[in-house]
Length: 59
Image (cartoon, rainbow, N blue to C red; front, side, top):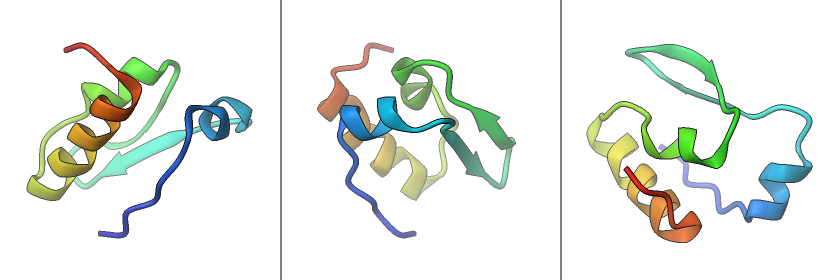
């Protein structure tokens, strides 16, 4: 797993943002909150937690 540090400005500036894991395939991100409800592999959860802390997402 490669960790990439993004700011909210980077995400908002992108034309499209997608997230992917092997369970659900590729899904579009239509709001920052989508990053915080993505399914849970062990590494996915670690990244998810960091994103939620950084962007103050609520589950």
